[in-house]
Length: 140
Image 1 (cartoon, rainbow, N blue to C red):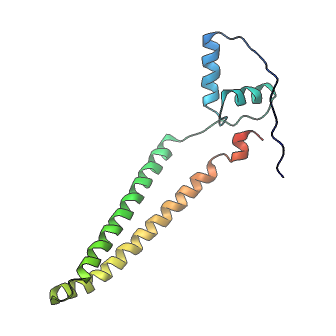
Image 2: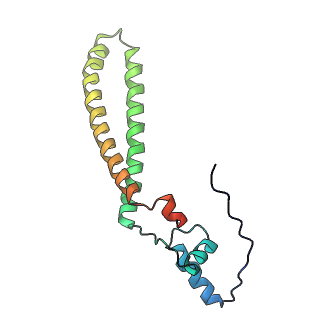
Image 3: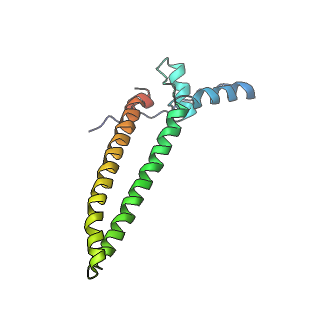
């Protein structure tokens, strides 16, 4: 069974000016602490506080990669629909020849898309590994 949840029933009241409070909130937002109270406890009890480090250029790149991945999936889906529709029209000899040639192009396109998706997944996994773990976020 998991460890019993700690009940926090003791209060500590600290009076601050508006500027001090805003500075505390600003500092807290830069960390992985989910709430201001968690940040305050960590600082007061001299526990580690993990600062968020975000590379804006990497974030922009990852957003672009996610969008590109979505587009690749849509292109592949649409291409499959077109080829499936053309397979139903095989009575006409020109369509049959076009379908056979296009199958090779489809396979090549999908293999290239797969390579790109694999590289994007590798980049995403590297990025994920650079992010703090849940234990680090919780300050354990």
